[in-house]
Length: 308
Image (cartoon, rainbow, N blue to C red; front, side, top):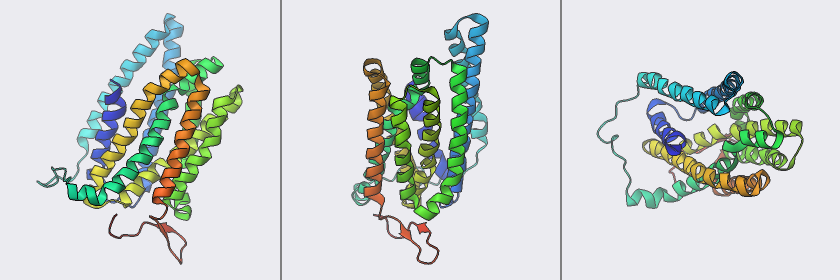
C-alpha cells in the first residue's frame, strides 16, 4: 500500500508531465505546479488534523478519527481522476509509444542518468528518514495534539510558497545548480535544531524555515534535468527522477521508523542531515560546469550543445 501512494502515483505523474507541457525552459511552470501540489497537501494536513480532533472529541476514539480521515483522503484521491481525464496531450505516434533504450544510448547518456539518480536517491532517502515522522516528532517530544501540528504545517506552507516564488528569481542570478545546492545547505542548521532542541517555539521556527529552503530547490532541480535532456528522452528522465526519489524515500522510511523506535529522533535527524549534505556535494561536484554565465546580462543558462 505504501508504494502505490508514495511511489506509483508520483512516477505516473512524472510520465504524464512531458506530454502535457510545451516548453520546459520556462521553469515558472514547474514552480507553480509544485507550489499548487504542496498547497493542496498542506490544506489537507490542516483539515485532517482538525477532523481527527473533532471525531476524537465527539466519540472519544482517536483511531476512529484517523480511519474516517483516511477514507476521506481516499475519496479525494479518486475525485482527482476527473480532472486527469480532462487533460489533453499530444497523441503519441508509433515511436512515442516505445521506450527507446539501447546499449548505445546508455553508453552515451548512462553517466548523466547515474548522476541525476544518485543525487536524487540521496535527497529522497534523507527526506524519507524523517519527513513522514515529523507529526509524530511533535506529538512525542512536545505532546501536541493533531490540530496544533496541522497548524504548524500551514505556516510551513507559507514559507514554502514564498521560497518557490523566489526560486526563479534567485536561480537566474546564482544559476540552477548553485541555487539548489545553497538552499539544501541552508536547511541543514534548522534540521540540526530540530534534532537537539527541547524548546517548542525554536522547533516550530526551524520546522517552518527548513520546509521553505528545502522545497525552494525542488522545481529548479527538475527544470535543470529537463534542460540537460533531449526532447525525446525528457519523459524517460522525468520517470527516472520520480523512481529514484520515491525509491529512496520508500526504503529509508522503513529504516527511519526503526531508527526512531530504537534510537529516537535525534540520531535519525542527524543521519538525514548527512544524506542532505552528501546530496548537495554530489550535485555540485557533478553538475557545477553544466551552466554558463552570460557575459552581458550576468544571468546563468544551460548551453544548447550536444548532451554528455
